[in-house]
Amino acid sequence: MKKEEYIESLVEIINDDLFITAETNRIDEEVSKNCWSISSSQEIIDQLSIEELENVIDRIKENRIAQIAKSDTNVGMIFYLWFDGQANQLRFNLINENHKHLPFKCKVEFEKDISSILYTFLKSSYHNGIPMDELDEILPIEDASEDESAEMNSYVLKVFKEVFSK
Image 1: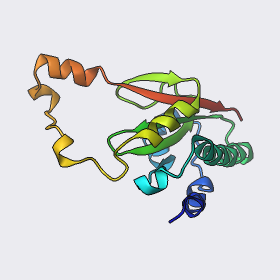
Image 2: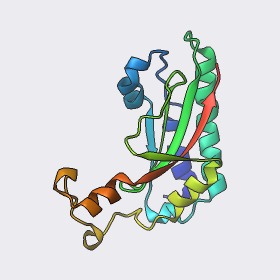
Image 3: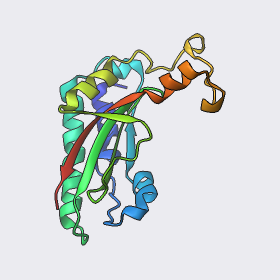
Image 4: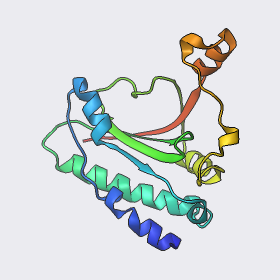
């Protein structure tokens, strides 16, 4: 597959329907219905540039902004994007702007520019999978030593966030 074919294959994500609600007690439904991921083989990743990925993300954002504008719900949405290093996926989601926090159970550091997250995604060396010899056994937090537990709780996720007003 060539990068042009790959980019065209993302049209389903670009045009997908958005679930919109103003209710904060439906966070699980929002997260489930409004989460998308982008991944590929190393062969395709090597052909992609940050600018090409930004173009895809811009098309996604344009589609979601148009859906928000047309919706009957009088609420904006929070668009947020991050690189999931364990799954080796670029992920993004939208939740309504009535939420005070993003639904992560780790510390979050907000990036001002989306390109740093796209760069991290493109530069990952695990697009074809993580070799078994590089995997560590993961202990439940209650079984971890004090140092291991502190390390697990100190993880900081870099996230790009943008609010799409109604």
